Structure formats: structure tokens, C-alpha cells
Image (tube, helix red, strand yellow):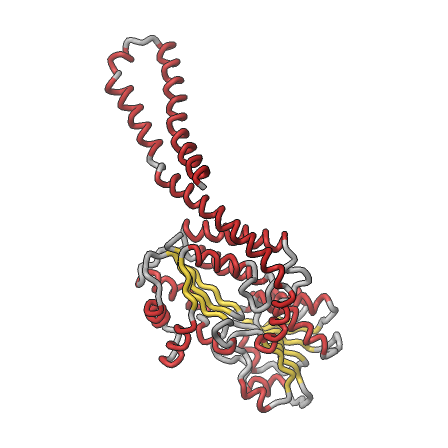
Length: 408
């Protein structure tokens, strides 16, 4: 437990618009994590980036403090200037041991989210872990912690009203979009085919919108979402030549530089001058500030949802108490399970040792005596020895676990 460490940059200490400076491009992510894992002697690691947080979860004996965080972020080489480095590191939250597990559990249950009660964070957390697991960046330690995280989150969402009538960033964005009273044949450009845009697309489809064009860096992902929406699919490069016009742009990518520049926006307008709508759920924003300055736009972004989030938190305050009780119970259970796991690992050699003793007894110590035994007697002796061998293996394991349980 003591080796579980988390470095967290969240909306609580850092402006949402600034958090994007910490986002790592997906194309470079695995390589960068492999590098810092080797350079800093980190046993296991995974990286999480959402619209309101960037976190590094690791298993390491290293002392994690502000000085370590500075060197760690520098080693990731994400182009952060010295001015922002100091600001971000000062605002970082660092957790270790039980506090780190408590943080992960609270996060998975959305207690740390911008919108308390939104379930997307659990899926995002699991996906981030799975990506690192598949890349060989994690091991048995984070596997056990993530099992606890998923179990706890499911209990909270099942046994409390914290997600009743959920108000997620996606649903809030859709509500604002709905208030604009768009016609169902509105031309909608979806930029990015990730989970956020998939979710908002479900709302649009449910309410009978039907005119879609999907753009994504990987064409196959754009095609998959376009098939679901009965729309067209394009690569991101196609934005520069798309000339069919639009009424709404919905964008959420992992790009670190704006995708919708004034030049791209002008092309997309295709000569139209009426006021358009942009729903930008990316951190950092996919929309260049110059677009908002030069063109009439209804602009909906994550940052603008902050006040709604505050009201949401107040309304669900009582549910936080119930959720925290479930979290504490799961931490206590996990601590016991972790001790049992340590016992199991410590006793893995017991079966081999007992087999060695058995073989020595049969083949050396009592070899002469056994030679004089008839086949039937030898068979009975083998049964007795096998029975006792199994009991000798299981008894210390059971006793050790009983001692742990009784002591707790």
C-alpha cells in the first residue's frame, strides 16, 4: 500500500483552460511513460487525462514530492515552459499509501469530479489503466488497486443516489445545445470520435438529429461513429477542404493545439454569415480564441459549466456522506485483503519445501525400509503421505489468514 503514489493536477487548483498544457498526445504517450518508468525506477504506472484532471498513478518506493514532480514533468518533455512548470507543480496534489487509494476511490465514484455523480470518470479511469496494462506498464500491484476501485465505484453508484438523474458535462452541454432550438435537420460536424463525442452523439440521435459528418485523426474510428449516426466520415485533414456548410460543430480531441483556426472556420462556413454554434468539450480547447473574436458564435465549453457543477455539488451533499462511508469500508476490506495477499506471496515456497522433504524421506532417509514393503503397503503409505502433504500445505495458509482476520 505504501508504494502507491499519485501526482494529480485537477480543476480544484488549476484553471480548466490551463490544464490542457499537461495533456500528452496519445501517439507519444506509451513511449513517454516507458521512458520515465525506466528513468525514475517506477515499478508500475498509468496516466489519466479527462476534461478536468491530469493524473499519474504509480507504484514506486521513490519519495514523491514537489522536487520529484518537477523532474518527472520535465522528463516527459511536453513543452511546458519554466513559468508554467512552477505554477503547476505548486498546485499539484501528491498522495501516497492509504491517502492515494482513498483519492482513487473518491475519483472513481465522481466525488472529485467537476460534476458530482457523473459516471463517465469510472469508464475513463478503467480505459486509462487498460491502455497502460496492455503496454506492459502495470503489474500485480495496480491490478489489485484497480479491482478495489471498480468494486467500490459500483457499490456507490448502486447503493446511493449520487448518480440519480445524472448531470454530466456531456448532458449539460446537450441541454445548452437543446435550448438553442435547432431544427432536427441541422448540419452537425463532429470532430473527434472518442468517448465524449460518442456520448453526446447518443443524445443527438435519441432526439432525432440526423445530419452528421464525423472527422477524426484515425479514419476507421470516424467511420465507426459515422455508421452509428448514418453520417459521413472524414480524416481531420479534410476539415481544410470541407465545403458543405454546417450549423453546429461538436469537438473533443486530444490535440494540444487548436484544430478550428480562423482559416479552417472560414472554409467550413463556405460563405455563410449567420451565427453558428460550437460545442467545445476539449481541454485545451480545440477552438482558437481568434475564431470567437472574428465570427459570431454560440460557444459552449467545459469551463462555462462550472457554476452548474457547484449547484450540483450542493444538491448532492448528503449523498457524499453515504458514498464516503462505502469508501472507508472498502479501504478497510482492501487493507485486510492486501495483508492476506502478502501472506500468500510469502508462503508460495511452502509447497516446494514440503515436496523436497517428502522426496528426501522416500528416496534417502527411509529408502531401505521402503524397499522391503510389498506393493499394497507401499500404495497405502503413498496415500497417507499425499494426504498429509496437502494438509501441511494448507494448514499454515489458513492459520495465517485466520490470525489476520481475528487481529482485525
